Length: 395
Image (cartoon, rainbow, N blue to C red; front, side):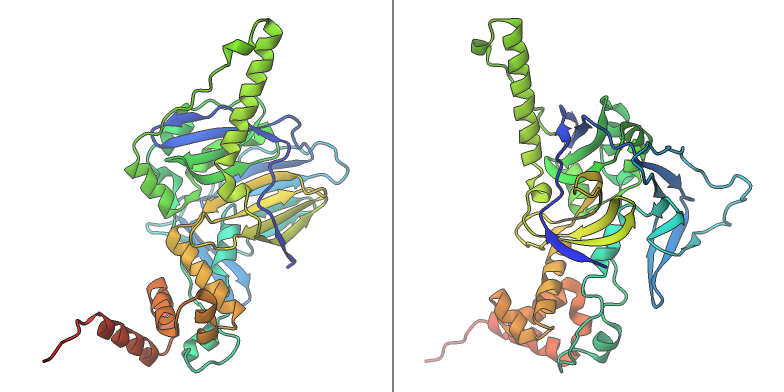
């Protein structure tokens, strides 16, 4: 897998349209002047009671709730690709018995035909996040348990919320207008960027718009939707001093729209404006490349993971992002620093500007305490308690 360091996703060729608000939800449409016609996406729905088991490597499996997959069709000569409709499960299948079914899938991204690829949206990016430093310590340091050295971070779990559980999102998607030329959207909750979604063609967006309710969203998004009942509506105003003719009015409208679009995109700088994103190529599809990306894990900033499809010139055809919670970002930050120091506790503590005891406690709070030998954690906790005890004075 080829890995490179790049900037955040580039929305060149897309413009932001007028946003619409519903409670805490703000949806900003992304419009294309020229749709991508030689790459098309459609959804393949799965049984809502299924869990999917995906074989990542011969010894590593990924278990997740997967409501749908995306199927990408492309052509090799630039001619338009046909867009197939949503494919439902075979009606002859009687379904699963009571309980949760388990469906076996071979890969996150699997070629089905010569120019057709089935991949699991967002799970492709989440699997990349879960695999972060999955192998554990590369050096057998005495502080780590045998399990940490042999098994690494297995098993590794992260939690997310389905879109239907985000307050107001279902109503917003139902009542908001889909614009002509719309190929995506920016989703804000309490004016914090929750997700970005881009597809190649307006017809693809209309077909895939309902799947946003089945997508995964982070803990922060779920909380903001409950704690912030309403966001204000932005109402751009025209400068009437500049308008004296119809041509002036058109120019003022164009200026206002451009300012609005730029302002909306600046609100997404936590995803689009970051300087360091680690991108890994997953699959080549003719002139297109399917990739996933990870952030630099800044504990004080926004952190988004996601997946993209770009053409040979780097232009964006597909994008789906997921905003990590603060706790998930801290875990990613710790794992990245540990890996940079070969999991040496003293070197990692120095890089983080802290001491060994504090680092051990941070690892414990982040859920990695079971990888350390029990006496290491017990000693750190004991010293922390001693530091909190009041000092007795004698005369």
